[in-house]
Length: 296
Ligand SMILES: NC(=O)c1ccc[n+]([C@@H]2O[C@H](COP(=O)([O-])OP(=O)(O)OC[C@H]3O[C@@H](n4cnc5c(N)ncnc54)[C@H](O)[C@@H]3O)[C@@H](O)[C@H]2O)c1
Ligand SMILES: O=C(O)C(=O)CC1(C(=O)O)C=CC(O)C=C1
Image (tube, rainbow, N blue to C red; front, top):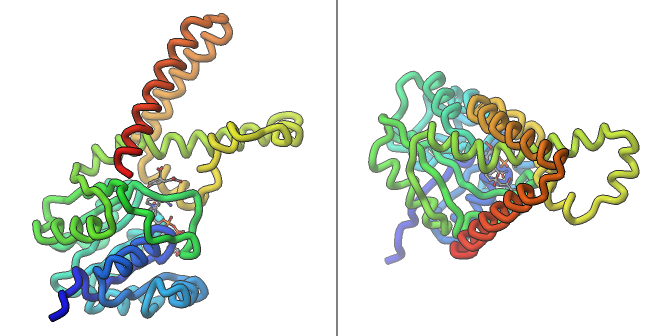
């Protein structure tokens, strides 16, 4: 007798990089029977079907979630509440509803506003994996392999729902951790949202520099490495910065103060202090890289 897959009917709302990669990975793992894609753009849903990422698609969220045992919402944060409102009255009784949104407090707030009483199957989540590219064409099955996924269950989340969400991510090779949404948002403000804001900000600043043309002509690997993430989707990052604005503003203020200190050291020509900062940073980055390698 063949084993039943983990998920019978998977519904992905927002079949882009994150949702498309999850569908591909679950299929490759043999963990899903059927994938239904849902979004706003028929062209991109059609492309998802051609690529074999989804079996069927619809632009109607209510129809998409009907009979799905796992619903994963992978739209930009600003679209979460609208999607929750559209699916609220159409979920199967034991469906798990999870998401891939980059901030968690705002998703929970949006779900409370849309659902009123949260369903027991609601389990907010965030895969800490991605690229600067968007859309289903950019999706790939290995994205979550050996990467972290953070779940931020709410008091209403049932144990069975958290366990099923955890098993889904583990089936695609991820390492799952649970924490509070507030802690998640503080940590991700520092390690993801702050660097994105800085990269976008730096390219924008330099592009208004006098002689901009010449500056970019002489930029090379250092500039490219530092600013790769400034090629990310501006709407997605606008939404993330707004959704996590308090924690991000704190991180930006903290960084600005250190930047002012760095500016003073440069002005004073304090080589010893600069070297100490750079040594410490290099050491910590090497520790971080070793940690990453350990995971792969
Ligand atoms: N890109 C990353 O590196 C990354 C990493 C982790 C989490 N996330 C989060 O995952 C989510 C999706 O990001 P992505 O990178 O896959 O973006 P994406 O642009 O590749 O995909 C988003 C998809 O959602 C669709 N969509 C937009 N509004 C919609 C709506 N109202 N209803 C239905 N579909 C809609 C778009 O058409 C698109 O297909 C975001 O919440 C983001 O914060 C992104
Ligand atoms: O590698 C990248 O390009 C990413 O931006 C991925 C990244 C990040 O590491 O900041 C971006 C947003 C997330 O929510 C999670 C992961």
